[in-house]
Image 1 (cartoon, rainbow, N blue to C red):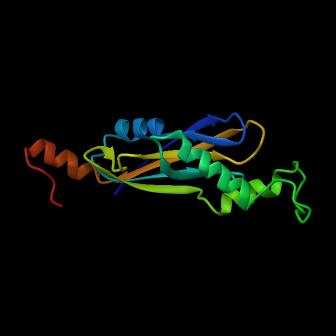
Image 2 (tube, rainbow, N blue to C red; image 1 turned 90 degrees about the horizontal axis):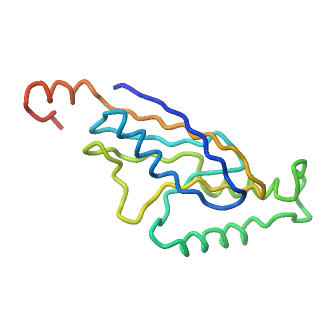
Length: 155
């Protein structure tokens, strides 16, 4: 097994969702891997990742409303408020979502469903720079041997 890692940055506009599917797909494609997995990880505690509906933007509006309701800003019981009234809420929102997603790679492409996209969720109210780490894992050697022999790699 071999792993290849690439990092990219997303500049958010503040709270909301930002689709990153195309950038992750570019990294997978440029890796040359045909079969394996890709892991996408965000290096922050006040932003997160989700695989979510990418066809109809209203689905994301519902997600934003859901997160607003389960983790509202500025609650009286919030203690961790050093960075503002959205401080605790942003960390709580991250705990009910994810900091990483793992997606199978098959035929050189992510095996996402028709309406699935990868989204960065910014939980802070103000813009931030968010770092995304993408690791593609697989066995390139098997694919290279198969290409050279004219046969497909064994499954």
